[in-house]
Length: 234
Image 1: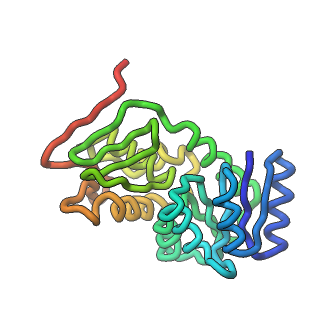
Image 2: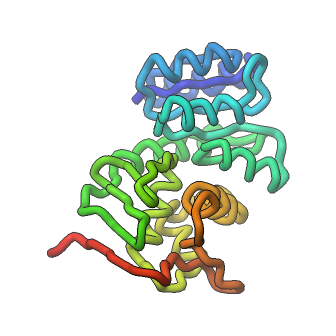
């Protein structure tokens, strides 16, 4: 497996590099955003470890360019000392899949890289899911609403797929967290941040929302106009 480490602190970068090499990874490093973006676009990585405070291009902007301009779906784990919910939300909004606060344990970082990289390879190859004018295609990783293609990172894609497999049903937060992260959710704010980011992609640009909050319980994806759900037959 190949991992790209974009970190301007040489000591932190060296520690991550040595640890991942000891686990059998092939690792590349970049000390600034411009070099990191160039490497990310030039090679196919299984995961990118991205520091937030980079010279040249910061982590937020680099991740946005990967997702919006280059349409790269590689899992991105963002590293930062900024621990507010607003910072975390901005990280997820820029396209990050996970968000790890410094200082962190290298074992924890490696576990997250392993889980994310394996998860993107296990996306189920099933028939398309459709709810109203929203469609998701597991075999190609594509999402459309009203004929417009929507770019989602791997975590948002899995989140939307789970909601679309359970339309019109109130799903508890704990159930969604387990479906997406199993026993290792990033933190208590992660689901809320990802739901907010998903709404920004599939709801806000359009006439009516699909995702609804059920206070004190969880979330529901529904379209009052029409529903078509294609499931894989057994």
